Image 1 (tube, rainbow, N blue to C red):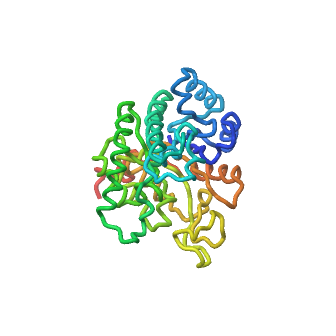
Image 2 (image 1 turned 120 degrees about the vertical axis):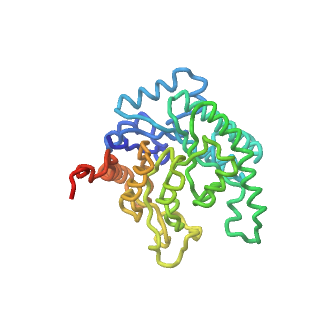
Image 3 (image 1 turned 120 degrees about the horizontal axis):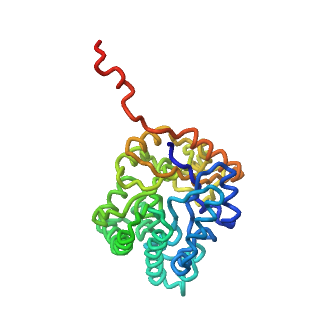
Length: 335
């Protein structure tokens, strides 16, 4: 059978799960990738309330929905970041605490360890998320930046995330980083460097999202093939690029998403420039059998309309890989 098509709920966390679940089914989804914010999945409640995970599962099942992964991007971002006032708005209150930056990073790391424990209780094999980065601010390399400076950033990542990944390993759960600007890994080169930094840790994998690679000029199909064994989840999200009026470049010009001057912006799936056909072929070639999880973002479109058409697009696009070579029937028939 074709892969299940799910919806990542991060952009829908304003809706209670009891309201979103029937809507998702109505929009054509087979399941939800639950975000660890809003009321969709609460890490600490999953650990302290023995009935919580079963109740969440029953709620999904009552609407014919499955769950293959949970996402804790917001807390993960705080593990390595240079903490400022923006983080207060995205992390749980118990992670923010008094706002002391190192304290926030340490509490975020603990919360990510707890997320692995909660995922095992919930029965999902994957946690998607972010890592943050202590060196993203130096991306342009000015003031002049040495490789030693960047090495220190990857070492910071390794020191903070290896203990987290060890808990993931103990719990039998994979962490899938969404490779993304502002993370320790944001293209193919930095992804390989991040793998090397954690010694090739077996629980360090990726949530493949082509939209964050394409506008940078990164070959997103090559990403799938390069890191085949570490692709644990796949976000279906579209983007167009090179279409602005020449006012704003790749760095965004401090404009908001949806500003007509931008040279790139996210689009409803199938309405941007991503070659999803080639992605499906590559996913089949590497044997990926996980969900196609729509992360819907389009500043100019009603989200119910967009998410509905995105589910239909993914189901129409996906196909089973071949069970045998197309010309196998001719073997031994002579010429």
